[in-house]
Length: 136
Image (tube, rainbow, N blue to C red; front, side, top):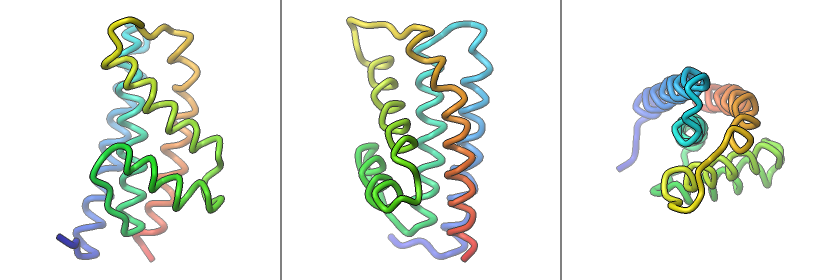
């Protein structure tokens, strides 16, 4: 089903709001040192922002892997988003997978903490681009 421009705008705005909430949740539990939870929230903060960008761009992704692929194809490979930010998003996905599903390894502060601030930067960059795309 295809979305109207108005519907796309509403979905983009909602996903960007979800992104900010997830990022704030991640930062809110830093003091508790729940590293798997923080990794999960960081990933979903980025995921919601990136998926909003894709929707604003008129792309449709069915899976998390589709989001990674389309983000890389349309924004990283074209140079709109730096390859460092593309790697960050992919690393967040991998870290979340490890934290949520790996029965042999628990995430540590050293694994997760370096991703907190860069995730905020990714969200800010992607949100700005999504808003520009949806307004054109």
